[in-house]
Length: 359
Image 1 (tube, rainbow, N blue to C red):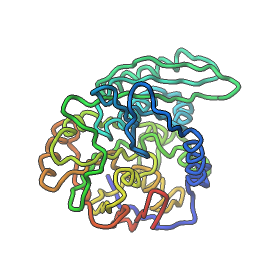
Image 2 (cartoon, rainbow, N blue to C red; image 1 turned 135 degrees about the horizontal axis):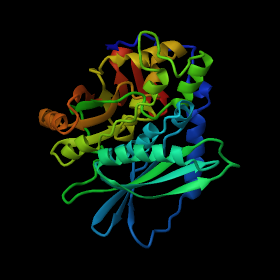
Image 3 (tube, helix red, strand yellow; image 1 turned 90 degrees about the vertical axis):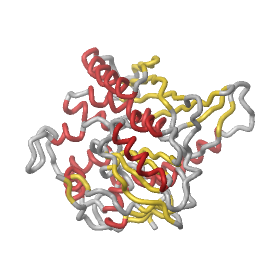
Image 4 (cartoon, rainbow, N blue to C red; image 1 turned 180 degrees about the horizontal axis):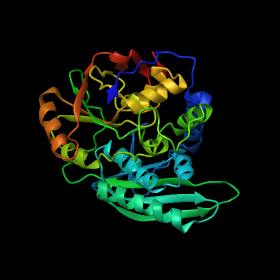
């Protein structure tokens, strides 16, 4: 059963920074990296398409446009290791990457994985492979290759990452969000849980509160660890069904950064999330456990909506019907685009003026 969030808008409890992930320091370091790596030399083959800050990098090769994205499962692998369950994070690895391809309207071609570990373990690798297979089947693409790095001097556990390649079928152009305008409707597809984001914060709070991952939270039968390991939902098939439809103006994969990810699409409008669904019991329980501010929850986790589609008012009904028929029967309307700037979730009194922080 889903419940309304009751934690305060601001709190003295846990934050991502307190858990060890400083968003400001990360942004500063990333700016330094990009400035140092910038070059004016044009590649001899292929023409990059400028989409700074978007979900995937695009390159024009002849008449084709290719999309490329990369990500890791992050510290969710530590939960997998604690419970000796690895298939779920294998599935996560595919989903987090192909969902980013879907966020620009690209169709996945395939994925390469990268596993870094201190020593190979056939049993663990087999389970990761099972999860990869499930994820690849859900996305309709293949495993193109990968890398296994045995680096005991660098890592103590397993680091699991990958890179996905996508393309745009004939007649389909990248969906960048540039066409988003006032009056557009915002549709949401629910998530399957925390997905693979914010696990440094999740683990620190659970450790501080002495939560046993092998035991259920009060009133539930499934162990907390198993709830946390639910694989990231794959959104490729419903997105494929609508990516070429008239009036589809933007896609957003609600991953790290929470609803602020909408600002990666267009900063000249306000995303008014006036019909955000009631927040699930797991998120509610975790927020209370860590005394987390509602704003911290909404800028770190997906809060029940894992993927967003922004569509012109006249096309909203047909797009919603197509989403529901193509594997997202739970897709719903969650708001609209208004004049102004930023992201607002009125029911939870949360407003983000820009990607950097609160209003």
